[in-house]
Amino acid sequence: MEITAMPAFIIRICLLVLVTFTGPVLRAQREKLSDEDLEFVEKNFPAAQKTSTGIRYVIQVEGKGDCPQPGDIVALIYAGRFLNGTLFDQHIDREHPFQFRVGRNQVIEGWDQFMQQMKKGERCVVIIPAELAYGMRGSPPRIPRDTTLVFLIELLDIKRK
Image 1 (spheres, helix red, strand yellow):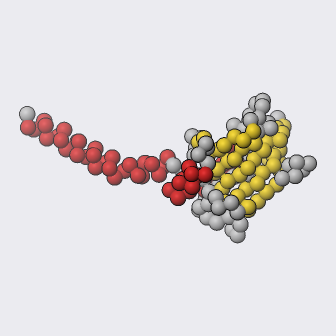
Image 2: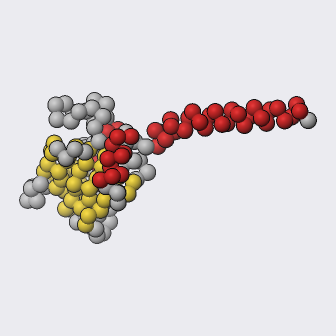
Image 3: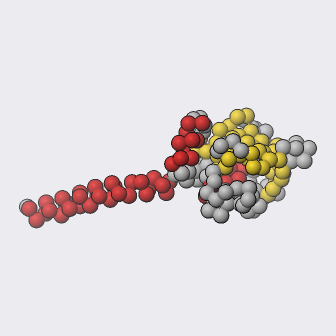
């Protein structure tokens, strides 16, 4: 009886050690924001929803109709800021909106992903983790490496492929 009880005890100890030391690592794999950025986002955007890939968003104005599909051309206006509020880019001319083809790597990965869940007329605050933006390289000199980006995006039109 002692011989069979010993392996169960060792298994329990191993599981305890595994859970204790890998918990933070597993959390880091699911959460794409740094601890500091996550704290800021949770404090300043408490209503933000989260996609399965780690993009957070707040819908300010609901849109209508279908969402863009890969290959569709979207027309939008936007303002891009760092978490500290500093504006790094914007395209806000409704007469000549920014356009790109969804799912064709013409923009950062976070935009390609998020556009596919927006609807025409929708305006959202979109918080994109560095990994889905410019990552470890950044986009010098405007965007430092490992920078979470915050966009105010309004989807004006969708042109089907």
